[in-house]
Length: 343
Image (cartoon, rainbow, N blue to C red; front, side, top):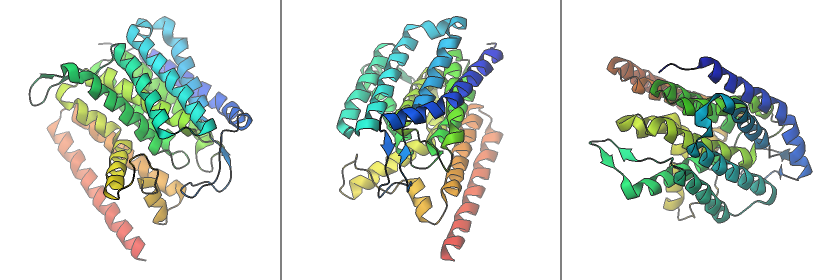
């Protein structure tokens, strides 16, 4: 399949420019609607900060899709309509949460509705090809629902440091974009390019010290878009590798969330109860600055992303070399951290 590289670059650049332009206005809107993140025990900000900056990300992404729509028929499909409706529901939910602090149960109910809209529009994980082809049939809907809800909340949970969620989501989106280019899924490439551009456009004012944070408006929207595009572009093409590739591409938020759930269950606490045990909290508590912690997590995300791309190439030697390099750097980091903590 021939790719329209000019179209991909145009989507990325449009989303980047629109998000960059809209971020100061998102900050102003946050202040006017009193969507402010006030200092709290498990938080990282010592002063109140506007927290509905995700409006800029949504604006950049959605408008870039609108601009490109006349040039791409697949953006006018039933599948895409379901995705847009679901994304709008998630965006509105995030904005209300940033203003009113909704309960976890209310948010989960609305997220389920948004995911169901996507599923009924035709976007589903329909088959698993390992160790042999297994049609999911009646399990297709529940598994797709679990994936969308899981990734949506996983990205939301890592939004704890300046620039963290935007950076990790950018890395995840770019990784998925490359995987989708390899599969030939043009629609998914467009979506991931737009998401990466809108995230990077928001990052300059969100990086430490942040002028504005994305809040649930941005983090849940990012998670939702990443979840749906991975289904459209990877699950429908990579068969046996799909789950592994998607999990690696979004490894940090997924595993951080799984460990959080296990930790809370072991400690006899509600799964949805917030705590200070996420990876970014642990790095800060070990003595690192916000910037140092964020760059370490960026590094982990990039490593996982590269690993997923190398595995997708199905080159045994390249995969082996990548695994060895990851193990060596992991060991070096572990020894370094152990030595510095002792001192």
